[in-house]
Image (tube, rainbow, N blue to C red; front, side):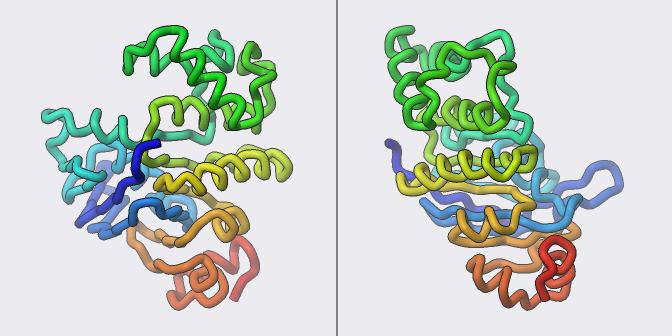
Length: 251
């Protein structure tokens, strides 16, 4: 397994039309940390995650992912592709290829991007399926799997590229409590490997259990940053207090 990596944001700003979505975000995430990004809908959490891996181009600022630096002009210098190799991304809606089996979904990128032989890609795919508890469903198509199983396949697919960290965008929001537990168990296993994990979530219990650190975004700004216990039990910022009252009845 590759060493985890540090992610540092400096002055990251993003507008969509006339709307300011992220306003000068400064954030440093240590190598191997698990950070939960929480806050009200529309706060900019998913946009921030997409800026980190280059799916959304920031208007101002700089993002450093290990040795790779993204800036507003990064599309021209190839840094985005280096970042995407370093950080896998997992989405709320799984984004599996419906015409491929679970194993084929995992094999696809190692075959096409890494140039692995089919034998090696299959071996790696079966190892990852076993790790997420789905080796017996290797030949199942996405439509034959539950939501929790699809999400575990999506995690395995991201891990097939041997990333040094993962970006997870609301990956449990569409799942019932039992299936959320399946996915959380996989993430906790990856955390023990020392991967850098950045999780966007509305699930406070999930963030409290899974994260080393909670960062609250509201109105495009970081309004709170600390341990989950500090942020969720003794929030200092009135905006955090209001958000927590809405989602969990906290003071």
